[in-house]
Length: 262
Image 1 (cartoon, rainbow, N blue to C red):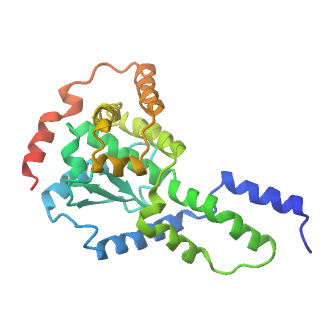
Image 2 (cartoon, rainbow, N blue to C red):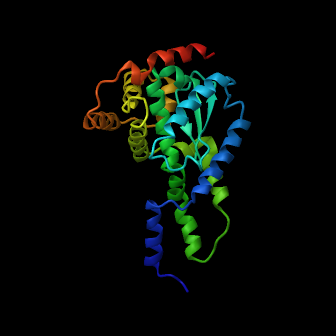
Image 3 (cartoon, helix red, strand yellow):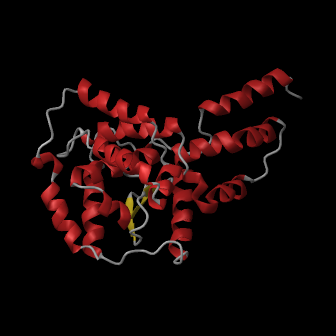
């Protein structure tokens, strides 16, 4: 039986609001991409520094105790440090594989700010932004095959195309806004100042006019419109947070950590 065109159109339109991929597919895709990254030693130089890796992983592990985290037992949430002081960035693949460049570690000024950035990346995995975007990009074609009674196994091939150059990780403004919101939520149950992401935003805004290549690369995957900065300031105001202190910023322990980096 052929479906009426209006029914097909309604089904295709529904793709904009759903994620066709099961959670297990996020984990599988993340593991596949992690293998590709580790094999590409020219583009991704993994920092061999167990003490630094343990330090950053300990921050991630603390964030994962937040009650809003849903996939702590499903996703890997494993930190890998990348040796590149010229790249101010971090990213998290589907399934929770977190990569942090040394350029980012040396850009932030305290532990709370790094924790806020890590929480933002964790939120991308938790909210399943990458596979949601894959659904929007690929879902219409896949759903059309389903409603027409055809089910070729095209998903892996199509997803591989999105891995090229990490295009899969280019975030939309709505993705960024949601990750900012959940970074704030996650940090509220930790020792860190929940609004610490604002310090990262403000430093980026101050240096954006420099047009440094490192900042340009960061902003290509993490757009920073002014409304993101104002939204974080609004969260801080509405939560009536007291001014940050050394106790919840942990600037001195962070400086001690940076001195141990190569």
